[in-house]
Length: 342
Ligand SMILES: *[C@@H]1O[C@H](CO)[C@@H](O)[C@H](O)[C@H]1NC(C)=O
Ligand SMILES: *[C@@H]1O[C@H](CO)[C@@H](O)[C@H](O)[C@H]1NC(C)=O
Ligand SMILES: *[C@@H]1O[C@H](CO)[C@@H](O)[C@H](O)[C@H]1NC(C)=O
Ligand SMILES: *[C@@H]1O[C@H](CO)[C@@H](O)[C@H](O)[C@H]1NC(C)=O
Ligand SMILES: *[C@@H]1O[C@H](CO)[C@@H](O)[C@H](O)[C@H]1NC(C)=O
Image (cartoon, rainbow, N blue to C red; front, side, top):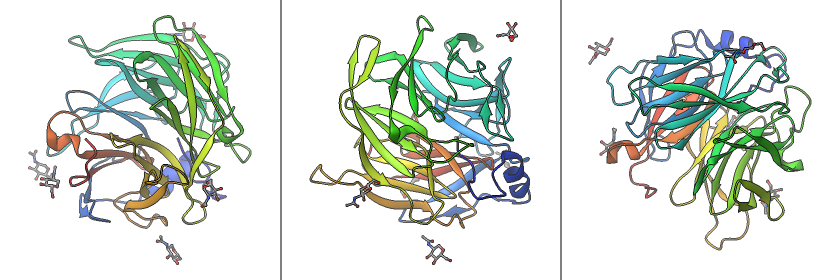
């Protein structure tokens, strides 16, 4: 999750009110040869927060302004946002990730949207199982001592170990999806927020090749940390490596991202860009940055305040589509054909 950090626009409600007058009609745009299209816009600019994709191609979308999980069929000509389930004792949903085929974990909580504080003890990780005629929903466990639950991801090869980003504590919690037991496994200065509330440090996180990659919104950072992975036991195996400072213009803040099969990261950046980060050919040094959709000033109406991204699934056309959610309620499809990532 990310907010506008300029004074006066700190609050979700204000941001939403300001943007509610923006009417975006589906139009094609291109930037660095990546055509993109707004395939859905919430009529009331509902804040869309995170995205996961089912094997059926259907997008699962969370929002921080409602405790309802939504589905959207991106192959439909006129896509709709369809409610799947409304979670109890929550006002907001954040990260979502598939941890078993067809089974998704998501973080629900009560968040005070004027102060952007997670109500203590309200964070619960839920499971939504689509391997049934209607989704089976159950609570996996509470993150009783977490101060925030932002991004959520799985460990490759050990999918039932969930990692959850605590953007306030600057930490990562681990939860065993089988037992619901959790503990704090990582806590680093590079994961801390750099400003007082609303505190937004570590935001998105994904594991690849024994490294935890993460963004830190307020530190404008993309970084990684080597992990040792024992059975249900994650720990740091080195120091944080800072890979990129994402601040082309002042106020740029990275949000969630997706790592492709080539190991590149497609990062959503506020106020309105997708930045493609690629490792240097030598393997050493900072990663290169290429703005592939929108721009650093956020002046492209086709991509406003992007919050998370995921590649499509299903047929070969879908696998080349990058789907992006936004805090003003856009769902944007980016055609990445021509880039060898799947
Ligand atoms: C999609 O929406 C447009 C505009 O409302 C409408 O003209 C068109 O018939 C719709 N297409 C389908 C397949 O529903
Ligand atoms: C919601 O919270 C109340 C009060 O803490 C608790 O009694 C109830 O069991 C909770 N409901 C669910 C479905 O977790
Ligand atoms: C690499 O990125 C780090 C962290 O963002 C930054 O502090 C450093 O100056 C960068 N190094 C170069 C050579 O650009
Ligand atoms: C952002 O806006 C400034 C001021 O208008 C302009 O100088 C700059 O080129 C813009 N940068 C980008 C990446 O759009
Ligand atoms: C994506 O772009 C490729 C190449 O330009 C094109 O063949 C394909 O039809 C596009 N996909 C969609 C879903 O528009």
